[in-house]
Amino acid sequence: MKIKSILVFLLISLNLSAHTLLMDVIDNEDNTITVVGAFSTGEKTVGALVKLESLVSGEVLYQKRLPQESELTIEIPKEQYQVVLDGGPGHTVVKEGFAPLEGFTKKASKEVSTNKLSQTQQGAVINTSVVVLFSIAFILLALTLYFSARNTKMLTAQIKSKNLH
Image (tube, rainbow, N blue to C red; front, side, top):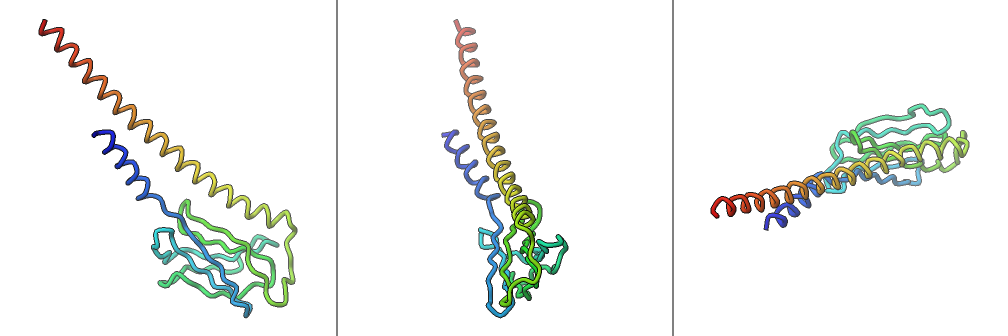
């Protein structure tokens, strides 16, 4: 019975903290994009920071926080860029931006754009790894406590039975 309640507690605690930041970048086909943010739980990302970063120079081309509707429409820059949605520590999403109708006037070398995106993707992998490792550590701790309590009960029962004889 106790092991079932421990497992239920573990599952509930993992689900309470498990939410992912989601970003949708829509090409409006009029030289604007719409950036929509949300958490996987359905919660809005009001106040999350949206940035357009140049893949040519690395500078921030546009920066604004998401309003109440968690959606922004932004003019597409003339140079290659990436869209960054920063929802706080451990909650960052990066996507390469759409080209304007007339194409980019400044293009980044392939190495620059690939490296920028891969660094953020590596951060997501590290965050997932940390969550998995902490979950495993928590499960092992719970099992240690369970078996320790069970063995303590058995030893106590043996000591009591020897004292009675």
